[in-house]
Length: 329
Image 1 (cartoon, rainbow, N blue to C red):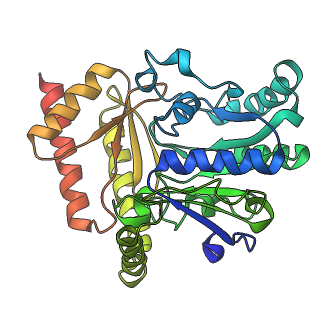
Image 2: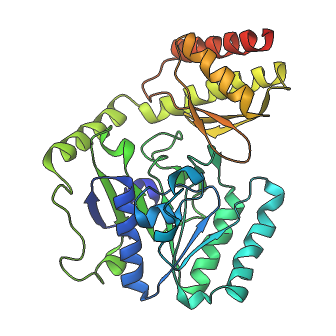
């Protein structure tokens, strides 16, 4: 982690079981260090389904419908730039929040995904991340990058944060999912300067850092390196993205945009009916696709990192076949 994130201060690791648990503990670390109550999150972000993380999530109302009365206080949801033209206004919205909603001295941390996951597989603009990082440094706010979905090769880098180095240096990283190839393991990564403000016993859990999951994590890291899977993610992801962009040119009335990094690609449709029909056609033709939120209905392409060129081409063929079938209906 120290090498791949280019942050020599990352020398403290706390292991938990789920991504949401890691997010909650990252918030605890931030509040203990800063002695502040507030949290800033961004529209379209997904951070979990526990009471705290549900309140921090805005990728869909599904996760908190009927539970709004239990929302914790001091969470501020600010605009996310869905278009590069919105970067300046979204950064201005942070400063406006400090003028109208809460003073910066009451904000413990700011948390964001480097690529929106449930919110539509939309990479966060470099300039926006850099601007947020500068705002955090100016006001003593901890900058947290949520790499639960993006970590461990998913975006063609070990961590998605690497796409933004050296401009982005988070204070805390949150890891899960790919860390142990599906075994229940997550992590909060930070520095001793920040973590050692925690009192002993503040963080823990019966199954946190359990031996089986840790063994799976060690094996996973060996496989990522020995089989060069991060490079494979980058190469096959580029092949997939270029193929989908070509299909977008053929079906402009159906496909709105194609975006993503590595093997984390989102295809945005003009309307939800097209999205559902194509997804169902793909299922009939032998390929499972996962929907996502966002401003427009989106399908996620998340092939395993061991995916081959032949499998990518087969997937593109199935997607094109499904588009043709739906277009002919």
